[in-house]
Length: 284
Image 1 (cartoon, rainbow, N blue to C red):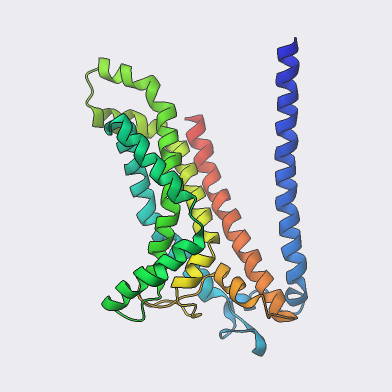
Image 2: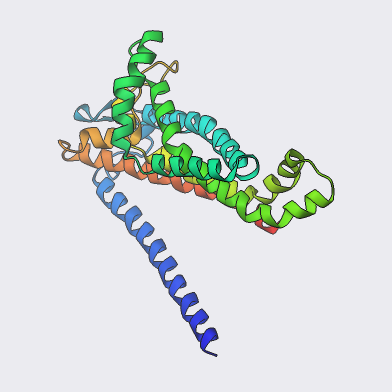
């Protein structure tokens, strides 16, 4: 009876915490909408994507170039970090010696705790000059992609390893009894059984990349333009807010809150897009 009551209390407590998180997200959305409303009540929301440029002092509020830069930087970072993270997880869980696996995991945990401004400083001092030697100016979309991929790699790799570890133990002996090779077991059993966890890791990586501010602000060049190459300077949505919020007033300030609202909508759309896949995997 006591155990039942304890479990019931835990269930109710978790339900309350979940509800509070949902309410907090709603409040954040309403706050951004309220702060954006002085501008959105004057102009059509479509002008945020159809105005000639981003010049709030001249009442031009086009953020499409920053949306494109944000999405390109995120997708580029995921294209690098996601495969490397899964490869790291497979190596540590199935191939590396225990002491080496533990050491590599500790290094990634340390890397995950480094502040983003440190990554940005390293990118500005080391990475940007290297890219500039290939093609100027160095501060570019490519620099942002590389920095973001390094930043999100530890999170994705550690989550992927945790997912593989939770599903692998129950299948290893069975696969060995069937005479499967180690790689055959990984490919046909461990990875399919861990797909939900791997998708969760990818979503968390994408969310962090979308919202990263300081590092991309320091290495991307901060020019509002749709990039025509990887070496072109860009400005992301989050960097735009950080750069201009300190002195923005009136409609300019409301426009910056509108970019924050767009960023929140992008993250929400990411979660909604991934939800059917997660539901399908969990039923499977």
